[in-house]
Image (cartoon, rainbow, N blue to C red; front, side, top):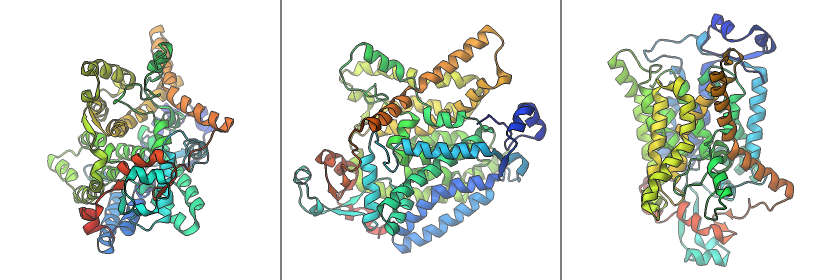
Length: 541
């Protein structure tokens, strides 16, 4: 795939100046994708599971009105997406995407390959959490909605002993709507069909993410899928230090500092694709939007997919609300855009519905406090924090600073990444791992733009200093690949050597096969006394 800069937002004269003539000829076959089509595709991908939740999980007296309300919100958001912050219609010539056919094919193949290698559908040996993911899909297929478990169905005596109770009901509690389209397919055609459906659904989400990223940076380049997969911190340096010092304590590739962990893109795709893919889509959707009148929907829906990531998206949204691209000229228009009915209604309804659902299992967040409280030697927090930031945030910051120093979204992303490690929620610190996703994805998108510029022939440095800077940037990019390469090596190597696949170790949360998962399931996926919660008393079927 050759890099092409001919995309919405550039005029013909600019395209000629930016793209060498011979490259245009080689990539002459293009497909025009209207901006509203791409915008609508992203919004519908994110809201179809939401509509299914409303109609499948809630009482019809609640679900039908909510479906109609959000159906109207989606129609408004799509119809308004080509209007600027002042309400004026934007030119199709400046917004439509001319996508080279080679990139459509390349993005599609990449999306399928990423889904397969990251273990979605469990067609290959996976590295983490997929026994849980497979059990979620199975139970959404096999159980009625809402999913309610009875302890009496547990047949493993060790599991029954861990639970300490032989009967009684618990509600399934998790951010699961990403699986709902596949679960519906599975209810009709069986589990294997549903399993293939989640693989296909995930691939479509990745494909749309790559198109949306290209729309944000206004070019088609191979660096978009590269950073979608390989973006990470410089985890290779502390890992090398651990190997050289023969350190025998607890650590893993991205978790070399207990409590503080930022996860590489590929690892997120492997372990929490249900959060990573929609979160990346939402970040790209926000960055490519031309006004702020529907951001209550496009940002607020992240709460349905990943409540932790909401902490990271709020500063980014705040920066976008006042950025030059989305800012109206008149103060009154700025206020009206922010306080639009769509923004207010979306925020209120999504917070009320999903907030009450998540609160039905408050035990999942009972483990929390300031990060230094979890250090055996509290004075070690400061050096650990500084080392962590220098490996995970500083490299991207230095590479992007010159180009993005006037971009409020860039600064909001960096600042929230500096703040998040200070507080811990859950034993593995889900707040740090998932709350960092939006800001890291912003840096990932910006990096694809920056490196495309560095590698552009017309930007080739002619001085020794320029060559050294470019070499340093590319060396950093190469070192960033380590976590993804390590995990890919583990996955493919395990498949080649025929290691045991653990995808069916759980089977179903209603009848857990391996007792080692029982405590985690009871804490994170079971809601105790759910009948007394607001959600199950007044909203759920």
